[in-house]
Amino acid sequence: MLTIKSPSNFPPFNIASEEHLIKNFDENIFLLYINDPTIIVGKHQNTLAEINTEYVQENGIHVVRRLSGGGAVFHDHGNLNFCFITNQDGDNKVDFRKYTQPIIDVLQS
Image (cartoon, rainbow, N blue to C red; front, side):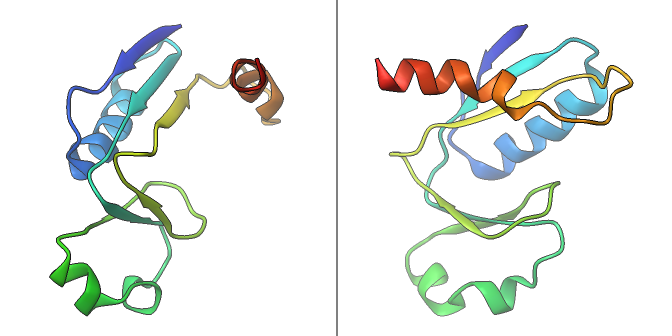
């Protein structure tokens, strides 16, 4: 598995990197990045309903939409983000434990 640590804290770059890696690499990838203060919203969310626009603008918080669905989350320099990018092996079932258990083990040690 290829491990990549993003050289950037710029949220649009990091989210775009995920998409670029998904579309252009065949090998499995483990991507790590830390974002500047950002609200990441899901693919189908209404950002105006999810964020306090005035507060976001006053505090220089980025707002970025990710490729996947799900709720809004806040990232900042205290949050290490990770992304597993894998090729489908024909089995549509996703084994989250396969990818998260090593991280859980390290955090519990």
